[in-house]
Image (cartoon, rainbow, N blue to C red; front, side, top):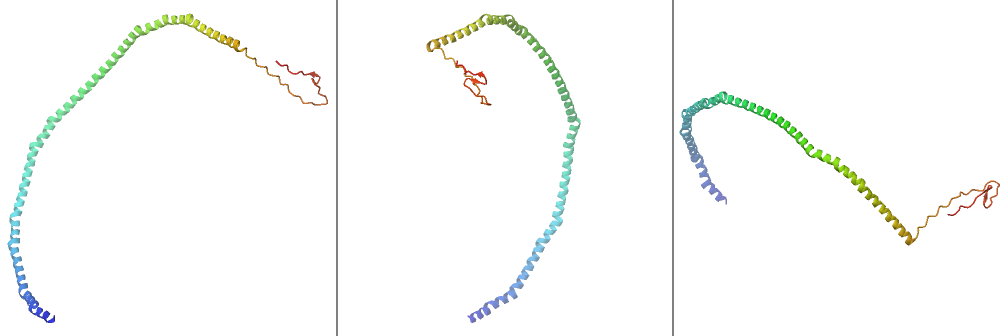
Length: 231
């Protein structure tokens, strides 16, 4: 294995390292410097020149042109749209609107006043009409009904009460009393007279014997005491 390693280093590695150090590396550095030089002078320098002498002046010109167009358009819009609109509002629409508002205010106020007068007049007319209808109703209905009640119905009611209803009530009361008596008589005839309740016996308080006097039957302290009579 050692002879193979020595042979590989001698025949492959050493020549490859010499080739890289002495040929490829210097050639790569030269190629890199050449590429950088070419890029700088073929790309960067023309791009800087183009930006400095073409694009920047063109951009500044376009900016000035756009600012000028904007100013022109603004002036046109101001003098064609804004100023006429302001003048129209200030000298035509504003006064017309104020006049219209004043007219509407006057019309609304006068209309409200007229409606108020009409409402008050309608109230007066409705109150007068209600009073008239109330008077008509009173004299055509209430007063006749009241007169009929006082002059006709009340006397008739009194006559009916005194001449008919009161005798009928008395007759009904007498008939009920007669029926009760008849029932009592029938009950007495069938079952006999009910027993009268016995009177309660008088309660004589007991007296305790006292002193030297002797208690005798039927006599107490010289007075006769008789037993209570039975009813």
